[in-house]
Length: 444
Image: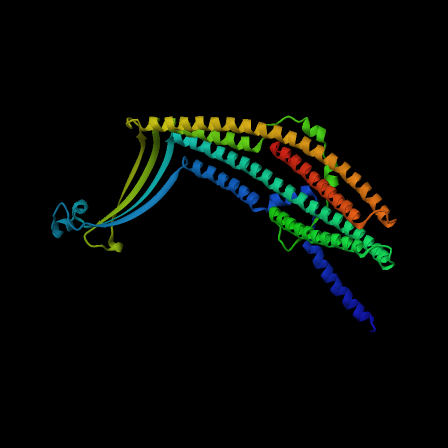
């Protein structure tokens, strides 16, 4: 097939489009970048941000109650049966217009009213409560973000673990395939029994099954990571960090020496803010015992007609200006009961806060101990892999020299795989233990 310049140029254009599309659909992330992406795109973080905006609107809604209010209204009334009875001649006689007020059966009225709250104790508390509710929404967003970042970290670790497991299995399958080729040659030459080859091929078959399981596990982990990040499933996520690189950044001794920062713990901050709201609720019930004072201004226009004719209506105007005072005097103990209930709720919250403070301190101590244990397991797993690798390497040499059977080689390879799997699991456990401490310390 002969290619001319035009064909090559068209191919380059098409290839550029295809490669460009792949580049657009692929994004690479460090673990921190993945967490930051989730905070801007995952639905729980987005909803927490919307709750903050909603709380800000609630502050203005509450504040507006104490600002001037203007309302207009209109009505039409037909009096089917009047208290007074007048003849039409008397009502229509000059100088008797005022009598229409009593004898008109068509009454139309429009009213414009402005009110201004001058004092209301519960209003003062309400504004303060709205601001505290905004604080609660902000603290809940911090708590939500911590949970989202923790989920992303765990998912990120799972993908790395699955990738590492695939690499280990791929390398081991390559080693076994090499041993199979060598053993097959020896069997062909009559130096080994065919059962030796069957033993290795059985091991290779089992390892290929494990490899397929590992590939599927990675696919599931990647989908979970995308879900927790809030990224489209059609996007390709490339992880820039490595398991070992993340582990190298961890100072186990420094983390173990840390003291619990209980004040900045997200759960405690949310609970303390909820306690503030309950305290304000108690304050509101107490302030409801105080008088309420408001000013008002009204202007009304009323038309009294014997027959309803809009164009012929004569409107009578009236204006009113004044203040209104409402004083609670006696409620048969209802207000006192509300206050006592609010006190009990506040006491319950105090008990809850105290319990969670103790629970978080226990969780922190357990997390520190868990980190120490998982780190010790990880160091032991490293040694186990080194030892298992040395044993396997020596067994391979013996197998080549005919001093070890394929069954022994299979046993040593299985032992190596178990050690490598234990090492990956131990590494994953260390990262999760570290993430749990960071979550309690609000350092994710």
